[in-house]
Image 1 (cartoon, rainbow, N blue to C red):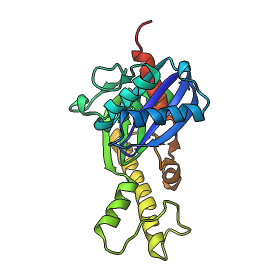
Image 2: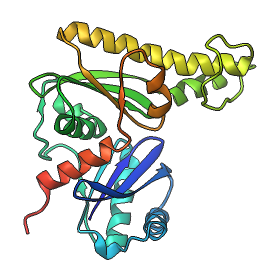
Image 3: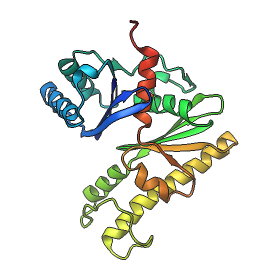
Image 4: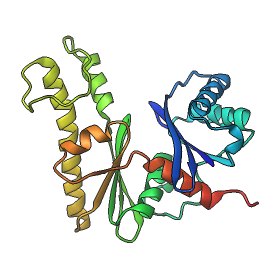
Amino acid sequence: MILAIDIGNTNIVLGGCRGDEIVFRERLSTVRTATVLEYTALLKTAFEMNGVSPGEIDGAILSSVAPGVTGTMKAAVEKFLHITPLIVGPGIKTGLRIQIDNPAQLGSDMVVAAVAGVQQYPLPLILIDMGTATTLSVVDKTGTFRGGMILPGVTVSHDALIRETAQLQRVAFDVPKTLIGRNTADCMKSGLLYGSAGALDGLIDRIHLELGEPCTAVATGGLANLIAPLCRNKILVDDDLLLSGLVLLYNKNKPSE
């Protein structure tokens, strides 16, 4: 079994993967001040809750967009499993053709999603990751990574509204009964959720025009299941896209026996 860990700015997703099967998955909060011991304890708890023994793990791989947490989690994996995880970064074999100005600047999460997307879905492809930031990655019909877009995630927009206004308060992320809100909370929910869906639709339409052909759109991330159904374009939701990509990358780069 392979332990795959994706460290985002807000959440950490970890999964135990055996072949194409994801045996377990857990979501943790990204805590930049957490110590090696604290992350080790979280790993231990996740394994125990899912009935998995550390001895079942043959290897580990880690991707991160929070550099301050990368080393801490790497050390926690080593402490708990006595395995040094592969780190997704420059020099790792991906099999991707990357056609951007500086490939070294490409976020590891976007690399991981693209590796999984090319393997699992028809090309050309738009990959949407709805995390702290919402990112769109574009892979053309030849399998070449062409670039993408980055925009504020729904949570970031929500927090900015609250921070920069005097009378708006925190709301839950659930779809209001009507598009046109009749109270402040529903107005915020509608603006945030349908606004995000509208932004995605607009970007997808423009990508189709630039490429000259329709793309398969696939979304992942914490809010994908909530926002994708609000879009007018068809967007497939794949909660395990990043875990699948990490396993594929591990198999491309695993140490020789």
